[in-house]
Length: 176
Length: 175
Figure 1 (spheres, rainbow over the protein chains, first blue to last red):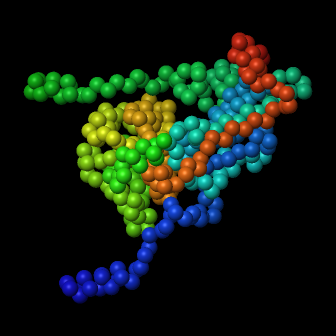
Figure 2 (cartoon, helix red, strand yellow):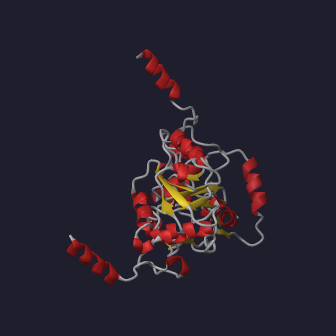
Figure 3 (tube, each protein chain N blue to C red):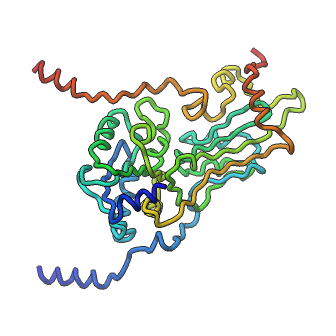
């Protein structure tokens, strides 16, 4: 037993210092690391491909006639970089930034406002051809009106109440 | 502001209580990774404790499901004041892919006030260390919202949006 302990002590002494001096010195991320996404409004054409593929629906597009607003709710971004893969113009890409901790949630809500070109033939901007899609989306692409915007929340979430189930426990005890 | 408050309130060390509120265990593994000798967060005086009554800070991971919400509320009330809540992971910050599902509340801040958000799915151990150091005021904040516009020159966006809100939405087309 003592032999094993001695061996362990030797190993521990030989290991040296392994702790990274991280918060005081910068760290290098591995290649192809997917961090916080960045975008370029000069390159974006507003096609909405990123909003279509985004799994947590963190990219939402609001079409308002000639102006489209693309909102990035980076608080729920899972950094899958599928927007980067699908973008035809390389207008959105993941960066090396992983130090995204913040005390304020507003730091994670990015936004891009674009001027959309109109169709030369009909004089309008992009519209859905299918009337069901048109009414279902109501000028929103990627997702319908959500809880983050002024149009109210989806009725899918029941209201939350913090009633503890103690009354139920009591009732069951009484019945027993 | 938070860091100033932390410096005043927790001059020596921060004891953490780690909670899983429906997380997939990814963030939990990263939180445990932070405590290994490699990213030794105990050099800042932080350590995991087994009871919320001993804790100064709650480390919450996972989108808060409806079943766990009252328990989380009770946990928050059991923690003595002053206290800090650190939300780790995209689930606890914004709800991740479950942000609009019926059985998930989508974020810790729907139940209890949160003082530090660490997004990521899961966040790197360095990101958690950075968040802890930011809470203690050792490092500056680096992230900021990116707001960009690409509009023609002299375009009055506010007037246009006001006009757009006032116009009724009509869907012309083939019906």
